[in-house]
Image 1 (cartoon, rainbow, N blue to C red):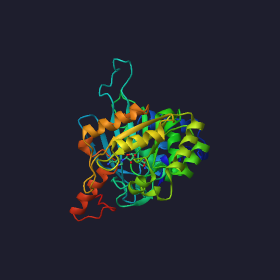
Image 2 (image 1 turned 180 degrees about the vertical axis):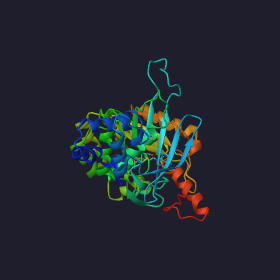
Image 3 (image 1 turned 30 degrees about the vertical axis):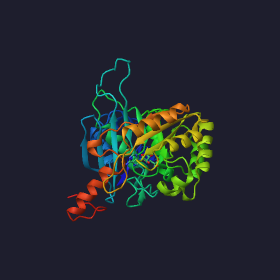
Image 4 (image 1 turned 90 degrees about the vertical axis):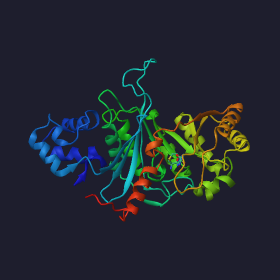
Length: 368
Ligand code: SAH
């Protein structure tokens, strides 16, 4: 059965036409999926019953099963999804302000979702859980859109999705063919209606793909994972930089800034005793002080079995102050959903480990 979310328009438009149905039917289905959070075709009650049955026979909006649903006290929720071939990915809903009503500032708290783009990851960053077993495969467009819709359906009736970060499992820029149509659905008025400037794509820094993004769709915010202020150190913790220098990454980041006009974000995972010294901060400032950029420092979220540690608060403070003293804009990313393993790849990994100890194969979980 065709996965509707892979290509909603090009699957449905000819299908309705062949049945003598007006083009507005496609808009009705889109409205039910993105706006009214329908669970399936049966719920789409302004379509004739016969048509709904036929739709359900030929298409499905859902190609995954929810293997786990974890909730943290801070409002973070995380889904582990099992796909048709048994592969698993995770995706997360983050709530900024628990109250669904307006905050004193007159704004509704952010509702950010974090999406995966691949099963596993081929980049091999030494501190990250997602890449520990390498890359299994790219996700399809529909599997990415499905994460959005599944997370949206966790919201209360007064809550709306406001932001998307593509910071889950995988390297988004290694799967642009599937990602770009998915993000188009997110930003379309008759999709999720999330404006492109509220969508951030995070990359390890693949120059060719960054150039492709600059040339085709410089609409989204780009975050570049640096993690080190010099090539020698970066090669040790971000293995793809063996063949890609910091200079090459920065040229493409600057180019993206030029064509998009959107301030760049550079991510920097702070690893105790590895990249967190005052000298590292100085070097990072040398690299970035002349750029319109924000450094997003992420104190390491420990991964079971890996030898890295979170720096203490004093080291974190020194790192921040050193950058700020040089005029670099810095933000520390607060940890959310720690109790539910909300860092990339961690829930997935734990589920696989549990399955292993239960004697089941991790890539082909028993769905009962
Ligand atoms: N492949 C993309 C998206 C990865 S996830 C990229 O490299 O940017 C988003 C960010 O979280 C990346 O900067 C990644 O390096 C970082 N990250 C991965 N594991 C982490 C961990 N255990 N603790 C803190 N940050 C982590």
